[in-house]
Image 1 (cartoon, rainbow, N blue to C red):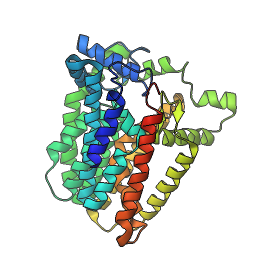
Image 2: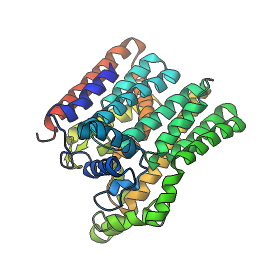
Image 3: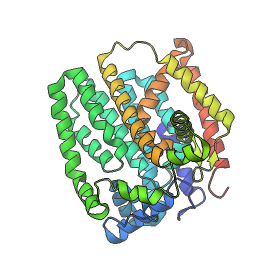
Length: 384
């Protein structure tokens, strides 16, 4: 059901009004994603790195695959491709959570991921975030099953390569998988599997790093990115000089804005969910984390939570490094941890209630989020 709802809601954005063309800057950076996909469809090569093709600083797998769909049906076909990625992300969240927490928590976790309004909306647009989130969620699902003793080496290697080919926020998957497997099975087995993951990813994406050195002068195009965005998106030095921000205040600012945009900031980050909604979500998340605080005795679950923490930390570091130079705190960076988000908050929320009341508590939470999503679909739909 969560899969079907996530699919139906996400389809609402690209299809309800027959949106075949880019609709302004509804999703962050969408125009640049559209232009980049269209470039790949026409030229089958990396586009120039400038303001029109700003997202080409990311690994190109999403745009390369999206170009195939563009040739089939233009912008709408690429949007449907993204919708399918979002729907599969919901399913893989269920699979990951079921392996460690059981079916009931898995179902709630899938609902929670399906009903994050910004994630559902983003999966109706063109963004490499969709493929990065799917790949990371698939890694968490394969890791959860590997920690239970199943063979998932090929799956881990494949999805890590897809993640690395989509966005560098997936870098944290490598140390996360290694440490989780080492915690569960020892360092030797963990090293062999991680080496397979690294070699597969480098074989698939190494050409892109070399191409960046040729076109930008460094493997990540960092210098070109800074030159492009320093003027239009200044970071901490600007806010310190103009508003007197301390480092702590600036860090709090990007954290708060990032969390808000994780849940819902639409239309080029200009339209936000109402503040009472954010307060309610914050209280719910805090309570759910409190419910999940109990000591974990299952070693497989311990290892998976360790991996989740590692990806959270590495993504936070990437998020802070970028935003320190360019203020653009977008919570979609953290969609690589959608599976842990769904599993931990779902488990913690249910733990707050007696076993006899958990089913009804889950239904009430899902109903509230469904209402929120329907309201977003009506109120924030492009052109509305």
